[in-house]
Image 1 (tube, each protein chain N blue to C red):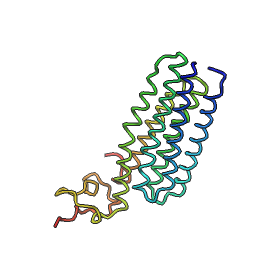
Image 2: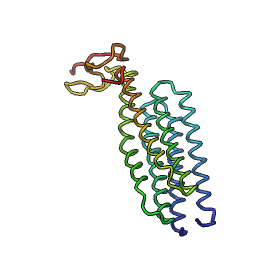
Image 3: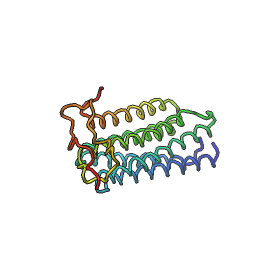
Image 4: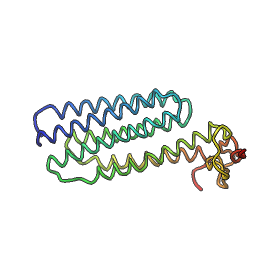
Length: 94
Length: 135
């Protein structure tokens, strides 16, 4: 890895931007007038956390975190779909 | 790692982070849920895709070969984002919108409002009727 700070600056910008995005989502999670808003906020937070994990992997130059990111993606999707199914049908399991 | 690769990775990270920030800002600022649904499901997904592309370029540039994990995550996210958005929209329609303000949807009516045999008794149905008859 070169000593130039370009990538470090970009990584710092990425961490700050995704952290700010998480805070905005948290605000919507607290405010959200309907339950659907809250589910949407949590879904977006999961996606932002995946990006943060990947950025951490770039910063530490390791590939150890990709399984964690994949698990986050899968469980976030399953959680969103089951919340919506519960709101649509009133039960989860057929 | 060459300068060209470093510039490419940095640009991809900055683009992705900007898209994610715009998506969350839209989630906070837009007026109601049907509008809010657009910002995170499109802008944020694109931002994460850009960051994962940056990670792919980075690990290729430092000589660890092409890693397929990122491609897997991108594929999964891009496939599931529209599905969860559609589910959220249907849940919102069912709970907060009366069927008679919606445009008619043919003789079958809106599937979102159709009563199904596996509904729980306390399902939050505002109206179990089919769409209003046309003309």
